[in-house]
Structure formats: structure tokens, C-alpha cells
Image (cartoon, rainbow, N blue to C red; front, side, top):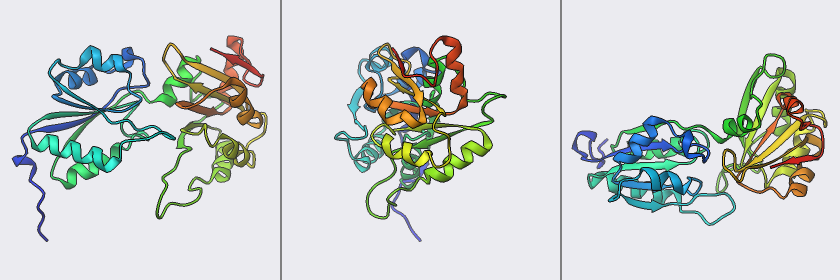
Length: 270
């Protein structure tokens, strides 16, 4: 079988997927900063802090904002991939700058696959994912020898369209596993579906399981609510939280009591 894709040795440019972290510019890795500084073309996601680009992009870099945020008008993924491929073939040093980590709910895997199909090898620079930054900002861990033997990262906003299941995440099975294996659940993009997630998780987890919802993790405008699984949706509504936010479920949050914010109380923090 033949292919029209150029071989990597004939492509002058290069591409790097870079994780910009949860928002705080100081949480960038040194490697991420170097990649941004070297880029001649930056394709920037909507959740990337503008201060990162302003501080580190070279003056002559072409900056293309390719917003992708759940529930909002987004740049089509196929269009972003075409931009990346075209720019690399034109000899540009391309950085695809993503919020958090490129390989955790950032479609980085899809983009690497499409680049390879076009004959382009791509480097990846990891970033601190929002789920980790969110609980760290509250002063609690994701794992703890007494409370959680592991952690599960899961999306509350699954793939839609032709061939997609109505609810591809089996929340009930996940809840039972988390309860039996003592796992922390970190749910990305789950605010809009919080009522459904709460209802399903209650089939396997107690209603008094501690929950925290953290909006704008690591940024000055960070807000959060500490509540219980049985009050997840109500707590979000009363606090007025919205995306981007991370939902964390598990006994590790009982540590919030030591900071004066009980995880099973109806109190809100800013």
C-alpha cells in the first residue's frame, strides 16, 4: 500500500505538544518555557493563561487562539490538526499549547496520531494537570495511606456524535470500585452533568462521602465548595460554581477539617 504522506526526513518544521499547566504561570516546567520561547507558531487553547504567552512567546511568533471549552463554541478539532500539519510542512516550529497536560483529557493522543499519519513525529512536554493542582491548592493529597490507595481520573464530558454511547462512563461500577478499593475520584468537565453523576455514584458510594469542587484551580480567582456526595449538585448551585472546575470525591478530603473547612459541611471557601 502506498501513501502520499511525506516522510519525516523530508519535513523541515517540527511540532511539540506542550502542557501549560492549570493556569498559574509559575507552575510551568522549564522544558515548557524553552519550547514556547522557540516556537514560531503557537496554537493556544482557551484555558491557557494569557500571561504565559505574553511572558514567553517570541515577539515575531504567530499566535493562533484555537479555543476548545465544553459548552462553548469551539474551534473544530480537524481544523486545528490541519493547521498543525500545514505549519510544520512550511518549516515552522509549532507548539500546540494546552491547558493542564496534553495527554490527560487534552486530545493530545488524537493529535499525535494525526501528525504521525502525516509523517510528522511530535514531541510532548508534560504539564501539571488540573486535578492534581486543584487538591494541592486545598492542602490535601490525592492518595493517602489511611484513606486512598489510588486515584482515578475520569471525564464527565464524554465523546458525542455518531457511534458514541449515551453514557459511556459506568458511574455505578466506578463508584463500587472506588468504595471497595479505596480510590479517590477526580472528575474533569463534570459540572454540567453533576446531578446525573451524583445520582449514579450514590449507587456505590455513601451519601456522606466527602466531595470538593474547585473552580479555576491555582489562579487568584480560585473558588471551591466542600460538601458531600449527597449534596453535590446543590452545593455547586449554592456556591455558583461553573466550568472550568474539577470535582474530587473521596475520603482524602476529610483532611480539610484540619484546615478549618470540614469536608462534610455546607461551607464555601474562596
